[in-house]
Length: 349
Image (tube, one colour):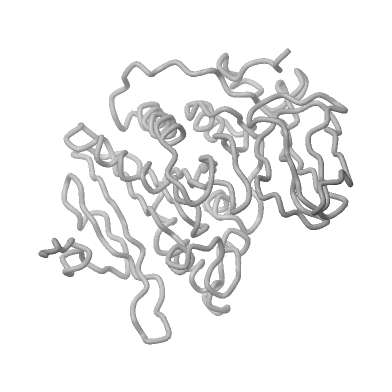
């Protein structure tokens, strides 16, 4: 049986140590960006997809799979570039569909030394293996962006709604979050040592898009995420706008918290994603191996379900429910200020 080889396999994709966007022609290109070397001295490279427009403009950065088991962002990036083939573009789209190559190959969240790359940004060129790897990502890739969307999902044993983490007090990132039209927008200033935080430190407006569940491709979340990214490109005048499919507006949350188990056993989490829970509502129960109820859990206050656990095996201290605190009128006014948007609605009744 004959097997077709890809450009990746037969070496037709160039390997570069530094990105020089002017070296790529107008239109679609591919490249492999060297960021590290393994124990055999082989290069560890990030696959890059580049789309250069015929007119000057911003460089829009897209990244995915910083956690190696979070895959929904990969088809989003591929489909975006394919959908823009032949479309007049101003500026450049620079996309890395997989950032954590060792984690991706091992079907695991963390880097191969057990470190979460999203907790050590911007890395350290003189640090350990994961710190050097993180530093290379920031220095060789992120520095080229004028704005960025980092695509994630829930981790193993949990599922997420389609939601965006963004600093809603910043007009640039608030606009990106709003145009994404997720189910939920969580006000979340960029934290130290996250990739989004490292981008913000460089003056790059960045948001995190949480696209559902790990280790799967989910069409119900991929399609609206793709539409949201195109809306951001249109708002930035990189592509022409077009009429969008109407979707329910996002629920704005001022903060969020996880509820954890106080005992160990088999966990049943009851609320649906993106549903509203009221103070005192039972949200989960835990039974022992014989089926006897050993604990029940209630919502500490009113909120919207951002994510939840789906792994029944839950030792003491396991995650149960990620609850977003729906922004009050006062919080909305403080966060959104002069850039309040009609499609970020008031708190649900």
